[in-house]
Image: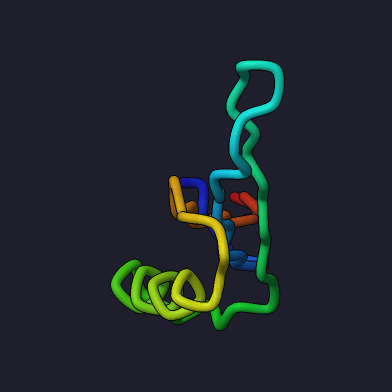
Length: 71
């Protein structure tokens, strides 16, 4: 049976950068070295706090996990 080992966890905020030539511009901000024990609720709370410090509105919050698989 395969086992999954969480190696790293990052939080990514996708911000609205406005429009250029009629196309929506997205700005990505990624925060690394997040504790592996952080829950989705923790990450969403942190994203809300960080969003309050931004000049641009947040479009999306993404949890990025990097894991290794082994048998």
